[in-house]
View 1 (cartoon, rainbow, N blue to C red):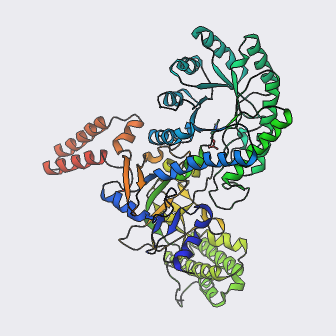
View 2 (tube, rainbow, N blue to C red):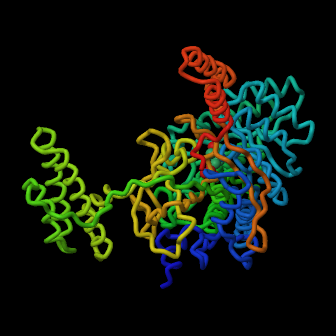
View 3 (cartoon, protein in one colour):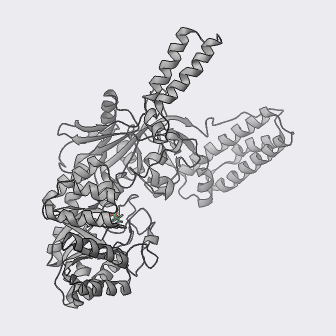
Length: 630
Ligand SMILES: *Cc1c(COP(=O)(O)O)cnc(C)c1O
């Protein structure tokens, strides 16, 4: 096996990247264009260094045009194929939930690329509705209005029918109907209505609590009946066109999707029988992304492919509707994650590393403490069969030596030798463990605690909030040197001073690992890591922990000659911008700083020239990037 394919293997590229990432002959990670599979892959390090030369430095979020377009096409084409395969008699319509990525550039491109398929938008709040109403959607596209609605929200959704916009107001509760009836009457319009069903079936996965009885959204059976009766009384039952349900995001198991589709189908049949002329069945989101490439029903993975999802959903809905003797409606799904996750890549550089195993050997000295001598002697019996014993011994001697130091029985010099001696043992153990066929889980875990720390130029809280909040796993791969074996094992810590600001779960060839295989850092050489599948949910949840702001963002288009075109650039936040987010006035800060400098000048501590320099340094810093700059 060549080194390049070896590396691709180490990071499980073949399992989660769907052929879009490839190790190039020079060891660079290359990005293939899904719309032009025959084109050569574009080197990601060359994109990064080209951006750097243009003044767009890492950390940078790279959005790739063809990655987004191809996912929109893939979902719509997969449903079209599944309609053929299953004989489903209705159509399919895709709706993008804005909350998954509200960035204007992303929403605009989704609307543009989705227009051949009449792709619509799903909104869950007034600001999202304002976005949707301002986009140029094709005539056949729907705006699905979810979320808690006040009168103003409802008025916007109904009044805009006059300009040809199709907003479906999805009733989330029986109470919302009062508002809708009142506003509709006042405006003299017949609104397009939907109702959100609370499914009884609970889903699993990280979002399980948003499904089932305890779900905050949707109506149960008794409210549903009441809503239908009130609409009938108001002579508006014909307005009820859509049935909505959403089982939660990132559903790992296809059978849960089937169960939800089946239950939704039963409700649909029942509503039709009550006289609601429903023409749309909206099954919400849930189509998962296989972040780890495990292809299993576990968190961060899925046990189904896109086309299996489509076939299963259509087959199930068809079966239930045929069984109930009802015609097939237009089927809608609101896949957000599956559309945008793969289209963005976060690139950051490694600033520094803390190595846990620098020396391989430590010489015994005659005046070493007895416990230290024992610790060093482990080297004499280390072998693959005694890994567990050696790990335990090393931990025991080190902890005894530390205890001695705390009691004043060991010198600082001896403690330093003890720490060093411990690491030499760990280093050899790790080497042996790598060669061993079968390593005990406990040993693996203990050795895993002694991996290196690579200090990344990023804020997890800002750029990968789900990795912090819900332990979301995103694949991370070095962008360069993939023709060399990654001989180190590391976790990644970020630039915030928070112990949570770290990434310690990674996708590797064996699935999920507590450490990432990485290369030794070479002094003077940049080492970039790419975080993949970050297009969904990461961009607006981010917070200003330690006041690290938005990163630089670029949108690129891959070209046919291995180059790329920069379509759009959004500069990351400056220090002044993040200060103003937390209500500081940068100008007032500068003035206050000047006053302090002037006071030092008055005391004779600072010269006129030093004053100028201090102030210009402060002023420059206000306008610069919040991240480490080279
Ligand atoms: C969040 C959400 C979605 C998106 O779900 P994905 O799993 O990302 O596709 C769709 N519909 C509704 C109502 C949502 O709240």
